[in-house]
Length: 330
Picture (cartoon, rainbow, N blue to C red):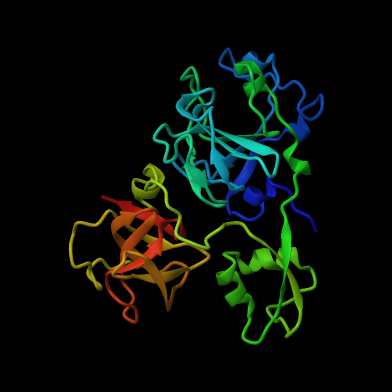
């Protein structure tokens, strides 16, 4: 089965759905939408047209937004752009650029930055050009790679993302491979691997088997970019959503000066150690989904952790913050 670039969010990331689907407009895809609420026509600048897809990411403010392509952050990116907090990522080789709109105004990237597929380019919010009331969501708009001469051409043009296919590659199973190890290696859930391979009926793979995979994130090296905006360090979490049976006195952190504590997401996380030259080296220990950790220090998207697991090192170990779901923020 082939997947498109919108599937990058709605199929392979949990709790994300399309809140405004251009395929379902009464007059056809990219046709008139004329979305009006409380007397405000949100499509008036484009004469009633909406050349984008709106996504709702768990309806949470400040949900981190990853980019589905690598590229350069280009003009149109601004805390107060055409779509409120706006980021534009362009890739000449793909002949594609993407507008991300209604982001939190505290953007973690700027024009001229280079981002990798899967990097966080902003946080879902409800900002817009006129500061009109708006539900929290992500506006995502796809265009051919080019410089747009006028504001209206830039804001009101778009191509159908449902025809932009996500590239796949083939992995040949070697000795020692399991679905779990492949999910860790390629940062894919086991469920995602099964969705890509209808031939996998259970959790067993065999030597020499060819498995179709997809790269959702490029994590070949630690990304060099500004520490993420408030989506990493001041997540708008529900402070009532406590982990059941959490004991704050069990292996409590060595210091109370932590940024937040939370739990590892459904993919788990690898632990890294910091070398003398400042680089991070993977060590052979995994954090499992729902393991609880404290974050004391954040550098380039990485957090120094203290974990409540008795069988893991206590501090001065690092995990990538996108693998963590904050629960309590200080």
